[in-house]
Length: 311
Image (cartoon, rainbow, N blue to C red; front, side, top):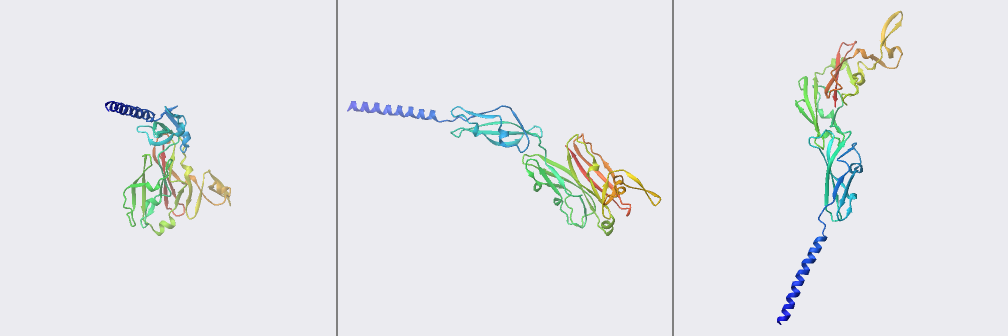
């Protein structure tokens, strides 16, 4: 019996040792290490809208057990780079091995054509005091990454422009942010005027092609390019040529070049429109151009404002 007990003890010990070794072996087969990602360049430069393949280009993933797992690379996140240039972001990649372990790599992403959000103004910000007014009806915002972000526009300032508001000039600031946290602001002025029969019948109106534009620093800027037409007892098209002399029935008169050439439509020479501009196209900032016109028939004058943002 004593001998049998010894044998049983030896067998139990062998089983314990064998079980421990088997456990250690199985444990050694478990893959706990994720792949290592490397990049050929610490920066990637692409245009906005570039496919993921362009963003991932030059990044590889190697796993000690599964070898090359570059095919598993995905883009985990893109965030604005703290203290970086306006077009610099941090892009983080992740890759996975066959045991679902992951590895990560972050490098700098540069969007060559990135810009901050832009606003749009659809018409002159001049309204009758009797009008039920909401500035949101005339303001838009778009972003190169997010597209239309108009619903996120915030208007700060003298908010109480309601029907029967006092006439005068009201100051506001437009503000909007995109999904990466860039915020744009734009100061604007809104005019409230007293409506009347004379205002409606005799006051001319300068119509511009745009009321807010963005131009890049150093770009040529000509304020005349944004004049569309004038409404003065009908539509007056803008003649940008010189005034010319025309003789009719022995009298010499000055007319627009378009009128002299008998071009269809009614015309007003650009010299009749006063243009005042403080735009410095080589210096980033917010500027304005004021166009003024006085009707020869009624004596009523008018003005229009173009906001110019130099980036």
